Image (tube, rainbow, N blue to C red; front, top):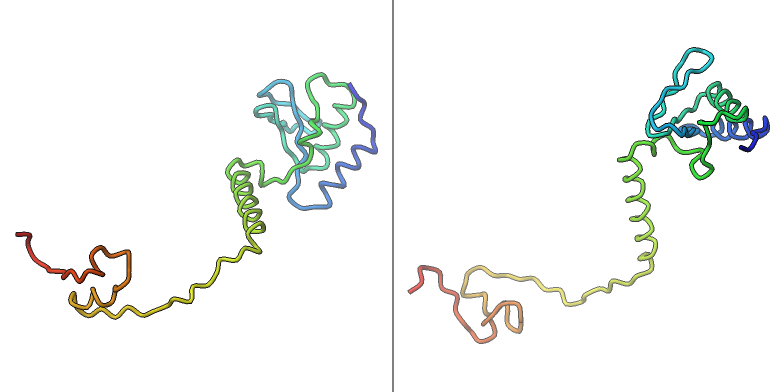
Length: 154
């Protein structure tokens, strides 16, 4: 097991202290357990993880890892993390927003065109529909002069 130096402990503490909302994540080989600190507080490991931003707790747990505790360790891929990302919904929200921003950045230079065929559709009765839609392919029978009659089918 690698020995943790005081320099490494100080580096981690400085990183957490420099930015508000960062936590250090400690891992435990036992999935769910309590680890008592010297001040009487329990570190409760859930799913093998415990997150803290307390300088005293970080020092004590890192010293314990450095002393060779067989159950405590640090995952270098998940050492320091934003506190809000510990919540699964917040993490998912952040991922979706990042994907959306990436999509928007890729489409930033796209030309969606400008349709110059703008017209006002002034229909006041069903008799005006055929004339207003002349040449349209979206209304069936509009170009053939079919009348639209309201009422029951015969």
